[in-house]
Image (cartoon, rainbow, N blue to C red; front, top):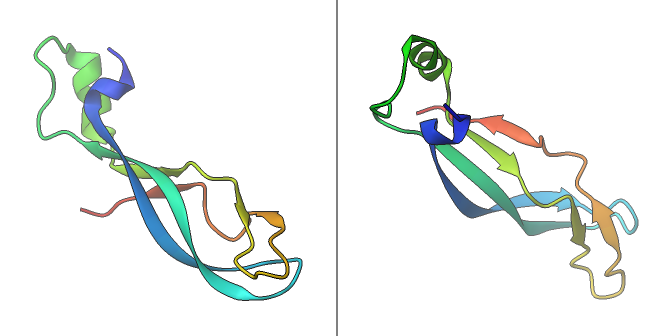
Amino acid sequence: MDEREFFTETTEMRTHNLVCPKCGQAGDYRVTWVVRRKRASLPRHADERDRAKFAKAQSYMVRRDDKLSCANVRCRKPFEITTLQSLAFLVE
């Protein structure tokens, strides 16, 4: 059984306060995340090994964006997102 069958997957935009490393100006940027939430119940065709995996599974988010453009009109240079985690577990 594939891990994708344990989760429902959606895409969300979240706002984060980031600083451009080139010009040093802070700003609010919208970052795209893929959110995988654990389903309420296990699919019917699961065996014992799948039940053990499902019991350990947690909801989590994976950051989709790696680069953003600076919001400063004079800078507008792309920069990599280094201050945010690329994977974050959700507490539900």
